[in-house]
Amino acid sequence: NAGVTQTPKFRILKIGQSMTLQCTQDMNHNYMYWYRQDPGMGLKLIYYSVGAGITDKGEVPNGYNVSRSTTEDFPLRLELAAPSQTSVYFCASSYQSFAEQFFGPGTRLTVL
Amino acid sequence: KNEVEQSPQNLTAQEGEFITINCSYSVGISALHWLQQHPGGGIVSLFMLSSGKKKHGRLIATINIQEKHSSLHITASHPRDSAVYICAVRFGNSGNTPLVFGKGTRLSVIA
Image 1: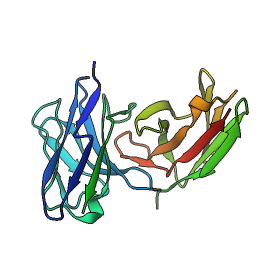
Image 2: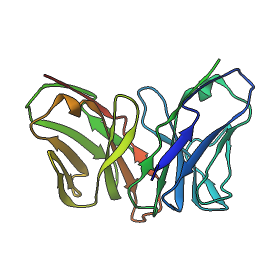
Image 3: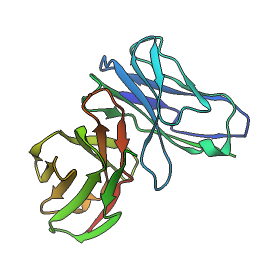
Image 4: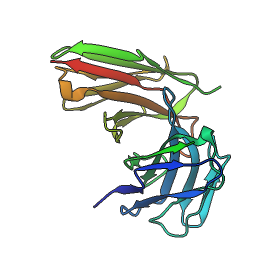
């Protein structure tokens, strides 16, 4: 099992550009999450999903969109990149809401 | 406000030392997680606990629900233990609330 995979590993965007961060898990987990990690700060939840077709906002959803068309995939979309979105993004999944979360390797995004 | 505080922020230890990292939180929780973030950035779950104590190898995690406090101990520390250790809690009685993360404790173990 590959676990949770994320692409790309690194990306530099110009202000106003858009991009999609990909996240795939092969553990048949219902729950998937997107977090951002800023220097010196704890992980913040952006969006989460409790199953295919169901998504909900987390603590910091502004500027992002998600979709969950399959159990395996949970892409995160940035429509109009801003410098404030410079961060490291982690995708995670879990079998149940209260279970251990498995994290992807992260995507380091810089917006200039 | 639901908050998670970790101490210390940074910790340097000599190889072999016993290490303690602390986590305190503001209100009742249903579960507490300890995670490790490697120098390369990857995050792995170490423990999930709601009461008592758990042990895995040289790592021990304890929680005191009444005092709203948890500790992560590392016995016989080794340079490979160097990482950021993150505490995360699920506030409230339900298992459905999102995790709230502390800022992490950066541990460096020197040979």
